View 1 (cartoon, rainbow, N blue to C red):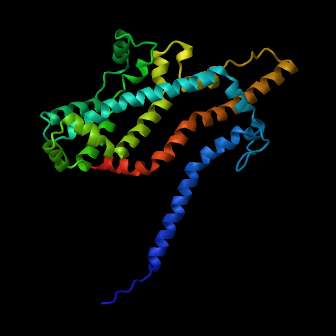
View 2 (cartoon, rainbow, N blue to C red; view 1 turned 135 degrees about the vertical axis):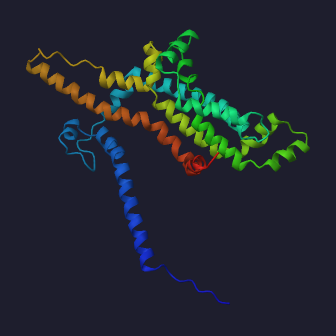
View 3 (spheres, rainbow, N blue to C red; view 1 turned 90 degrees about the vertical axis):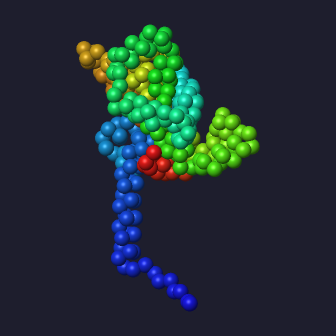
Length: 301
């Protein structure tokens, strides 16, 4: 029997074009703010403030980036954030993956009760003051551990990983491994982790972005300026810089104030670009796993 392939109907083509146009508009709405920040970081701040910078840089100026990289505290904060992110993600994975795998096993006694215990913590927390007292009493104040230990395990991320293990690690694989004399620990490290690259990549992205953008924990627990992450340095530069005294109304003082305000405006955009570089570098490598990870998280665990 001969089969013929017919083309799309007019209604289908119209629907596809509408979806394409809507998604294109959404893309530009989402992408333009980032593009605007990039072109504003290399434009004359006066032109930016007057609304002349819209689609391309006006009055090309690299002083903002020069000042950012010349400022020692900014680069110190950058490397501090990088260290906190690497250390924090390592601890997160070391706790999340084994916990999620254990709770995904049907033969794990008490897994439902333990899962409920974890879920309760998503809705009920100790609060800010009790958490601060705990961090203080264990001696974590003004140390890196105050930034990476309190949030060492995200219950939501753990539940997503648990669902992944439950749906992608067949029980027959474990049975075959046991016949060959493979124990639970060896099975986890030798067989489960190597085939779980998708969920590991997703956890690295979620945890990494969280650590990189975090500033509130540093605001609470770190008192030494040299230990502050990049986000706190941005706060110092953009929010805590004291303006020049208003009593200095001479022409030279006014001109200097305008120059400093312009430089501060340029640094604002430049710092935003610099602080987003690691995330923009990391995301393309694990973007292919992102949709799969979100789909896994939408399944019932």
